[in-house]
Length: 96
Image (cartoon, rainbow, N blue to C red; front, side, top):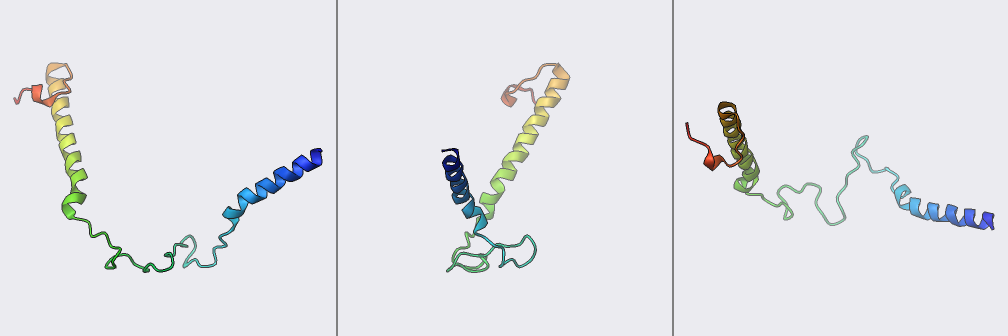
């Protein structure tokens, strides 16, 4: 009975490990560079019909929000150093 359970466990392990062993790495352009497009897709995305053509304004939204956050944090810290009390709401800070 122990042999049967061991054989079943060994077989289950082999079945679960087989997808990881399916790729043999024979189509690598260089060591560690094994990406290849799916069949029917172009080698380069830029300029193809799959190119998302992102709007620069949309791409800059996060960096603009981070700049605003840093400015607000600087005002908070400056006010905290002057008054000795930290105020989160920047609208309550004096503009001095």
